[in-house]
Image 1 (cartoon, rainbow, N blue to C red):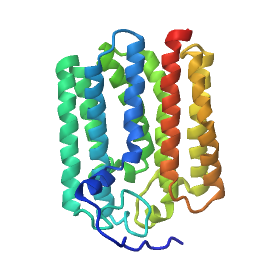
Image 2: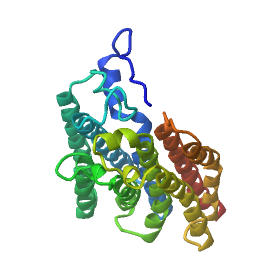
Image 3: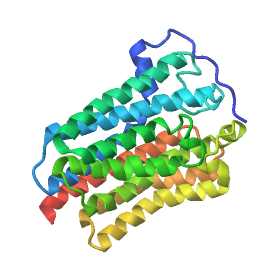
Image 4: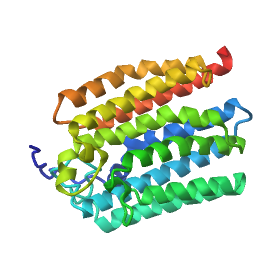
Amino acid sequence: MTMERALPSGPAPSRLKVWIEASRPFSFTASVTPVVVGSVLGALDGPFSWGRFFIALCGALFIHIGTNMVNDYYDHQSGVDTLASQSGSQVLPRQLLSPNAMYWGGIIAFVIGSVFGLVLVRLCGWPILALGVASVLAGYFYTARPLSLAYIALGEATVFVFMGTVIIIGAYYVQREVFALTPVLLSLPVGCLVAAILQANNIRDIEADTSHGKNTLATVVGRRVANWELASLIYGAFILTGLLVLFGSAPWSILLTFLSLRLAIPAVRRVFQEDELLGIDEQTAKLHLEYGALLIVGLLLSRFVG
């Protein structure tokens, strides 16, 4: 049984700190890592533009922030995020921001991200517009009505597609202005691990989500099956990596990513052994970040070692 959190004592945090907390910076690996991966792949195939890279990075990051804030707003409105829960940024349950401020903060973040996106459309053409519009819509309707994708067990699929494949192929396109197969293939293990962050979060919140009618994949299949799904996502990322190398679709140097098994194995073991999973989303986010960093290093090394 989850104990209800007491309101924090002491002086209130600064306004800036509150907004930073509301953005959930620990989760930024989910948007930053795929942008860097796609950009590095583009650099390996031709000239690299730092300007386009930073514009793409800022655009993806602000769309991610908008998604987080709108998500917090709707989860708070539906009663999912409370002081008794462990989900979201907890800024709204702690009354550090008003729901209205959180919602419009998210909208402003979406607008800023879209402005960066429009600059890339001017530089790279309409394919970026298509990817950008789809990403903003997916981010907003992740919890917003009438779609509420996270409430109909489509959360993991949504983040797999948009924070894995779409960002990586988009970042590659920004550099090369062409679509290619390799970014799609390498997006698969990255997508598995970003979906694992959400799956771990939903396993942690399975009781609270069930009581409030939020139908995540974990609440639909139950804790036991959800545990195995998480294990499949995490270990599946490494299996896919090995297969890509085995079949010559990726350089052998990306096998450096297997060093991140040091974080993967404890994360999987934990969901099978523990009932209380406080911080499991941050734990899987660290795994995603370390895997992504090693993937980037491996790709860069391939330029020198063949």
